[in-house]
Image (tube, rainbow, N blue to C red; front, side, top):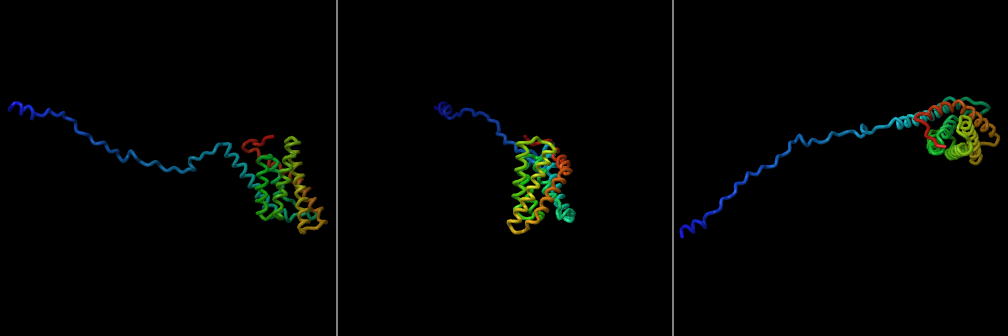
Length: 215
């Protein structure tokens, strides 16, 4: 009986288990936050994009210089009561050089800037120069080949029509008289002549970054 009791009371030997290892805590060095990088440093311009930005910057500077020269110098120089309209010459030439897709947007925004610069006669000049600029650009691309002669000719005709449109609107608003129509015609003719040398400058700027117009 004693043997049975001892056999019953004996417990089987327990397996020795290895002590559990605590997970290794990561060092603080392994979780350093990423360095803050300015978004301007990651913004990379391609060569073509930089040239396009340069071209439109020079276009804007040309228009601003034309407005300043017109207000300061050319407004005091008159021939038979008429003077030049340099901002209109620049706007129309750039519109014709860039083509209908880009030129139509340019003539709209530049005419608004031209009006708020204080040089334009009234707010209706925005619509007049935009209409004749886009119309001349469409006629040039539809019926004429691209050349210096056709661009200057269409821009000159658009400039003359612009002066007549300003005259008609002035008559309608009671701001001018019928006997002043020769002054507007002479202004349009002077603008036509001024566009001939001015085209070389606009064309040189337009070639920066390559030709983007499509015929």
